[in-house]
Length: 97
Image 1 (cartoon, rainbow, N blue to C red):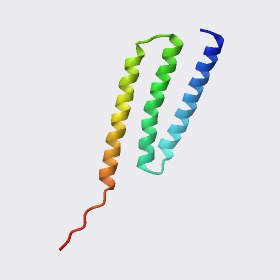
Image 2 (image 1 turned 135 degrees about the vertical axis):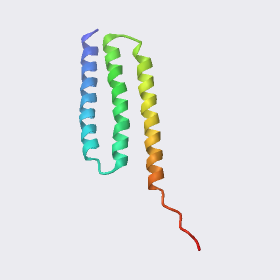
Image 3 (image 1 turned 30 degrees about the vertical axis):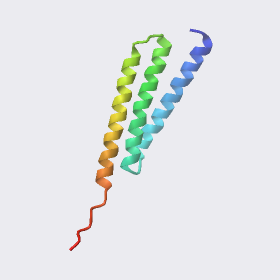
Image 4 (image 1 turned 60 degrees about the horizontal axis):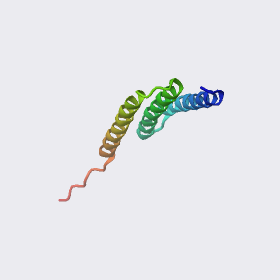
């Protein structure tokens, strides 16, 4: 690896760690359940990004399948949470006499 790529990979890892710390704050303080759900979805994306940085630094290719599975699980969990929140927040139909 060249020195420039090492610097860029370390900078990317630093940004990912900073975003992770800010997301933990959002999950802890988030005023609504939807804020927490979105933050957890972004955590899955940050995990994929961290694995990508690791794969780039070690120059291995087999992490791609792991990244795809984690991205798919993050997407399906976001859809499930959104559907749960949509059903929970749906107004009840009014009864007509």
